[in-house]
Length: 146
Image 1 (cartoon, rainbow, N blue to C red):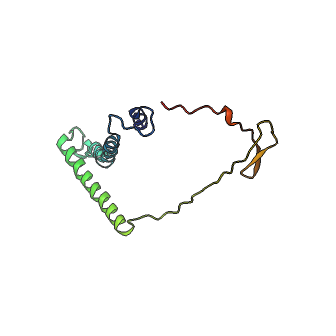
Image 2 (image 1 turned 90 degrees about the vertical axis):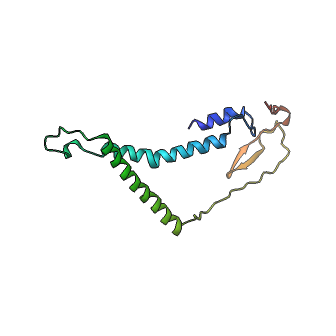
Image 3 (image 1 turned 60 degrees about the vertical axis):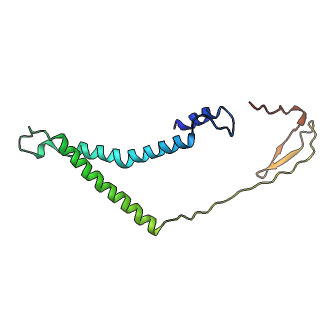
């Protein structure tokens, strides 16, 4: 979410400017970090937390599970989750490795006509509705390039 303002600040307000920060590399790093958090860290944290219930060990529930048993449990189920995730992705890619989609391209064409600035009866057709137009090219401000 904050990469867009960083990219704009990096360009210095120009349209095609290369700033000192390599934004393609930064965006790739954030994308890979997000993937790692969603595929590795979040499942491990969930399995580690839910790994061992203290009441499973004995009847009175006084024995606390060791950290190594919780880590092992979290790693075991995270590994199985990765196998399931990558196996499912591989199977889906093998059978449906591409996507077909339709794209509707809308184009428009404009025609220019001489309009008198004082003639409010002139109008253009916009989406089937006549819209009054008053155009004067003398009063268009110049475009300022920073």
